[in-house]
Amino acid sequence: MSRRKFLTQSGLLAGGLLLHNTAFAVPYQSIEKVLKVGIIGYGDRGTGIKSVMDSLPEMFDVVAVCDILQFRLDNAKKLKPYTYKAHDYRKLLDDRNIDVIVIATPLSEHYHIAKDALLAGKHVYLEKTMTYSARQALDLVELSKKHAKQILQIGHQYRYSPLYYKVKEMIESGYIGKVTHVDCRWDRNWNWRRAVPDKSLERKVNWRMYKEYSGGLAAELLSHQIDYINWAFNTNPQEIFATGGIDFYKDGRETFDNLQAVLRYKDAEMIGTFGATCANKKDGYLFKIKGSKGTISLLVNEGIFYPEKDTMEALQTVDGVTGATKITWNKDGGIPILNERTKDGTWYALKNFHRSVIENKLPDSNVITGAKTAFCVDMINQSSYTDTIQYWKPEYNIS
Image (cartoon, rainbow, N blue to C red):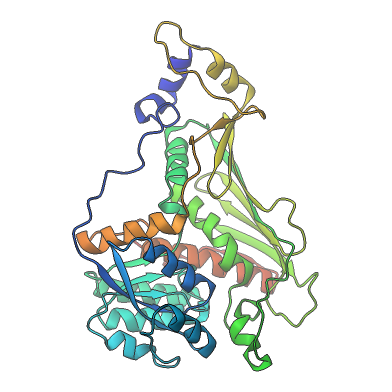
């Protein structure tokens, strides 16, 4: 088989996936409309989003921040004095000069603030996971449909990354063959705690440790990979079994520091394993998509395709007649999917958010897709906390 024939049969040549590394998206010439932004939740994620927005001054102007912790507001005032008091986020919603609300609070507050923001007529960028529970996700879907002129984008960034978008095209084209297994991890060797300036603020600062506020490792880490698989394969799991425990850090936390989930995608004839531990960082971030023709191995900003033996032989056969471009192999026998590292996913996501608001178009990561990922996270937590298999419910089949 010539290389050109192989690429053509794979649907790759027409798409130009590995051959050309074409530009990720149609160029977007921003209409000169700078969106005024208020950020609710000014911790690590809120400040991170503000930093990215500040790098896009032609699109965003952060004019207000809000947080329940005074020391975070004090930090914000060092950069810009225009803030609202901690307990008063509704005053921010009442400000007619603000176009967009960014919600980067603990998970338990996502639904309530998003609901209030939509009712206040604001566009919303809501951090992942969309909601704390499946019930809240269903309610937010219905509310969003009643406010269709307002953009609600969920912070699942892989849907905007040029790398991950290209991998989705490779999957859809059949380039990596029939995928039967995805293997995902996000490990660390760290207790995940933040410094607390006052012991009375422990639960508010380290909210990820407590079930009242947090969806744990499934929501905070694994939801990114779960959402991507839902998107790339146009699927959702029908069955989930998860197990976990507080196996290392005996420090009063309630959410697990060790978690493993098995997701069965019956319609896609595929199994996904998703895991995270806080006591070993050897694997770190691991994301492998295993097809009959090869494996895609992803980092956040880099990706390599490792062909199976027959696929490798086909790729190594250079068609002398067509003069097809020679494949570049790395030292491990893999093919880099892109020639360079991509930017932080938030940068791509926020640029798309601005475009969605200006053009009144549905974002790739929207209330429907966000809800389906929230269902998965809720099912993982229900399974791991109750030692039961969780099944996809008919009411989760939303559109």
